[in-house]
Image (tube, rainbow, N blue to C red; front, side):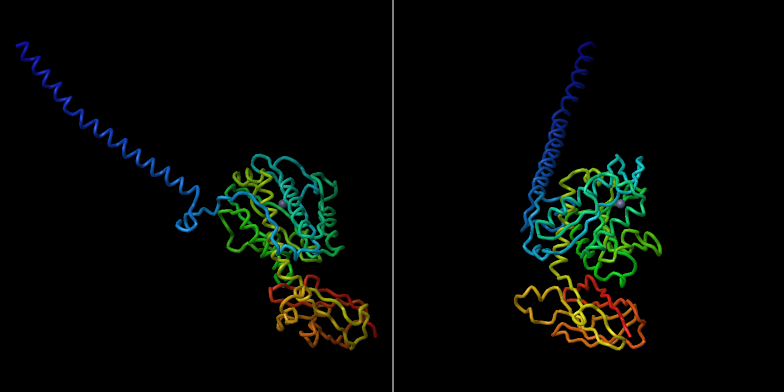
Length: 387
Ligand SMILES: [Zn+2]
């Protein structure tokens, strides 16, 4: 009886052992599959680390991965030589009430980032021979009321006059999600044609440098979108081409962390710099009074204006060619269109001052577009109309 029971128990035990090899096999199999998957995953990652420019499909290159920092000055940056640029690192001159005002989620101050970017940008621009003026050098309040602080910043650009006024800012939103680039011009597109082309180049420069994931449907925006009918005070008061860049959002936690890094600030400055170098390569068209040089003219008299397309004076191959779009010439006297004859091969306009013009100071506006799509930087000429 007892042996029978033992035998039965033994058989039961043998039955359990019989399953063991299968179990072991299953465990080894799972481990092998897992191991293979791990090897494959590691291999994939190794491939990602050094993508093969010939064999890797383009979608495998992640846009947001920054290349090693390098800031070479391209040869075409030489066209910035002599260009007058005023950089305005936004804020701080205005009263800084502390707290969360213009600060990122962990307290990074926008004013401090703006200043670092401006300093780096000046370094690049000066290396290319541009004349750069900063509206503030330090991270210190000027203790001026906001209105006066902003007026003084723009006044600096108007007095030179600068070829471009660029106010450097970073954006913020109560939602921590958004992070994109925008560049603002003042008013309507026709108020600001010369600013627009610089704005387009700044956007592409920033896109390449920051490699943000999201982009607006249109990143070049009128300041009327933010401040209906008035725009930004700092742009509104500018009498020269003027832009305000909001490269990214310091209210986005990941972006705030990046903005703390001076190398990232330098990347941004480099993007703005390349944008400005490409803008300058397209030439900065200018107009001047050729006769009478002092602008004193009688009603019904004639004014001769010389046109500089910003390109031909460089000389070189094709310098004698007409590089002005003939249909783009616009002439206005105190806002009213006036008659003119254009001799574009001589780069000259002859304008008749209407006999009904008021006596006294009058603003002559002369604009045109060169083959790079660039408008006249300072289109306003002052006349003194006599009887
Ligand atoms: Zn700002």
